[in-house]
Length: 632
Image (cartoon, rainbow, N blue to C red; front, side, top):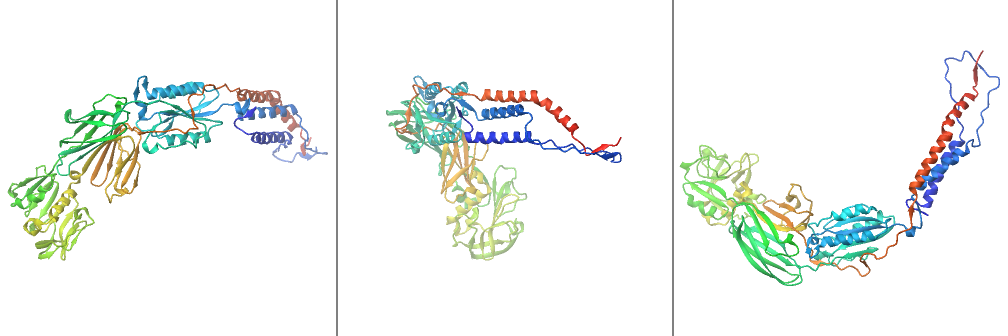
């Protein structure tokens, strides 16, 4: 016999404390009852008061024995007394079932996960009925499907309901979790069993399990031929915003070379096709170009039928690219046309000031040296406004003065460093509270920005009527102004198709964690880490994740399964296969009978002595002598 929950010392300590308390209660005297009366007028002292003596013996020894025996039985039930030897008692196992994306690969007899389920059921059925098992589903995360359970129906139901995940197997995490369960929760540690193909990421291929005790593997053969998409990247051409550049990475996971045809469809129309020669175990890349400014769905497909169909097709959503419409009211439009034509995202419409209207759909309006009767909607760029109608008070007019200072810490002054600009003539403005001085001469600001109520920039000079029209600073200044007024029009979109799991995102220099947001498809912020200019986040399920910075948005469509490139080699000390001979352990739990006997003993003690004890106590209180008696 042995205890499962308590040691012998713990049991003796608990039983000794309980026994001492019960015996003490039996040896204690019952105290006198205090009688409260209205007056002592009719009471006299007794001739000879009764002397109360402490009782030194137990009057009901059978009652005490029954109580002590019942307490001992209940403590034995709590300690889970078992009949047999500890060496032959049931053990606690942890079964790691591989549910990574690779287990969805088809074979002649079903999927790889079907084979794993069959091996897991065979292992459970070979165990003694007293053994407990925890089923853990392992892909990118280790997820317990049951607790330490001896009910075979519950275990087999958890195995039967397992489905392939989207991420690759993280075996290191699964083994660490199983070892912790064995250490903290197992009464008698059994085997840590891994059921699967052992296909992991290339970075985990050298993982060793030597630190895991009682390690057993149930290997699944995965000699299957498969080619799949690894990565997809799309971005708009810098020179031509209407042109999309598509980059593909395809891998051959099989053992023979294959020629794989690839097709791209946008809006149901074929926009590209190519055939790739894939060597076994190697990646190949391909590049496509197609033109569109409209939003829609791009489908990339490998036109093959292989073991894993999930990585042969990917669908990505492309955003529309709307041009930035700008109305230019000027009598000399040729002075501004080269500046605006340098930006491919700008669609400018040049109009005479006499044809000014406020109901146009332009998002930015440029007013060249005139004041309209009514302000237009959206952002406004004023160029040398008339002094009488200037939106900003004019402090003075200067001639032949150089620009001495740029607001380089603001996005309006990004990249503007030159101090060689010399203005033949310019208005100097008197800024109000909240105004931004973009460029200044000695007398004050000559380029002023006002962020509210609607964004507005005022130039005290015309950049096209001086030598500045030949300077690179002029188009850069206008690009900064347009981007500040309508940042969404200049936001750079990059779309990526990839796999669920850990994603690494390259960032531009100067981008800090405070300027980054990682947003999931349900609009929840995902945690991320940054190391230098690389950002990493984890997504265990398929979906869309957006990485947003100041002027850049990267959309990750994580719909492809993450397939491991390497096959993990288990240590030589690991046991393999289902145990062939497992004898039933000759151990029996006694705690139900002990708990029943303990409760029955307390019930018998109460029926025999409990009810009469109250009558005896009442009689003793009546028989106790009082120091006073009533006078007759």
